[in-house]
Length: 475
Image (cartoon, rainbow, N blue to C red; front, top):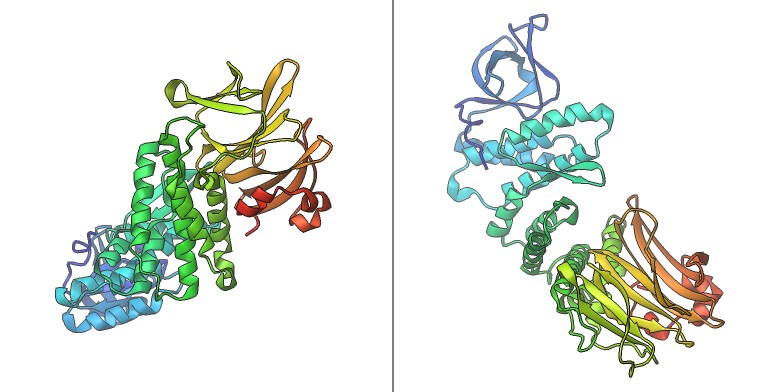
């Protein structure tokens, strides 16, 4: 964190407003030198009437500003408590982030090294993170102003990264101050806030290679595991549990991708079980409105990998499913009508994770449902059908949009052989949607759907007992 070069002056003025004019002379009619932003630090070189004579090292400009538009400090140790008090005051005031960062920087310069604890870094991280969020969601009218504030923050060594996702660029704080909080703080609340800030999934580069993404997720899990939640307020415990569920669900997907393609001898995915345990630990009675979205995201991610926690195959009657390693890391599936069949019909190869534990066959033995997860947080359902020519495969995705977050899963067979029950959870345009549906087997089109199983009589009557026991969609 580079703070010294900007705050090297013995007498300093911190700009407290946006759009402050630096003028060539101490009067409002004088020529404009440049426009200053809140948080800018100026070296004080004199005073004339109600103007300060200053020098802007960042822009290499000298001039005059009104005294009322800046806050002065000599960066002496005696002023350190006052500087920290101002930073505390603006910490939770939207729109003052750049100025707050400047005051924290001034405090770190003025305070004796032995007096500096985790608090100023907690404030600094909070301000930088909120500034990044505001800049990411800025309207056209606010873009220029917030961009200037971000540039000002960068002058104090605050690092931001651009994350491009779904055609949009998001600005994220890189988290150095929060890492210092984790290293210095003994306060559980501070540590929890810091851990949550640096483990967000929306600030991870989506172009990372799988091996690097797995390393990032492993680091996120370790950071969250180091937080002692026993004395945290209930709402904060919920946030930690939900974040842990999301992270361990991602790790479960990574583990499954690395495992050998096999149907026999299914091994338990410990990460999937940890995700389920973390999700189950959320106290829904104490879940705030602000945390509903994060909880729903954790549930979708966990729901996508929940089969990894199951060790046994479902009873599948006279159908045998086989998996083998294919080329370039693919898993190739084949199916045989009877366990004693000498050969199996090849079906399809996939780069996704096949969850063989999920295989369910209808009573007639000619249709089966299988969970296949091609992406982290995105699980599809393969519908296998037998006709005169053999077996065919159709893919039912969570939604028709580009993959974001979602899963679709088998929930039961409807007597008559023309319909099956399906549960879906997806995130579309930032909104979470959950539905319980009856789907036609001939076209895989939804016949009827409802937000709750009890609202759909067919679903309520014929839902599969094992699905009802294991699904997270009924949380």
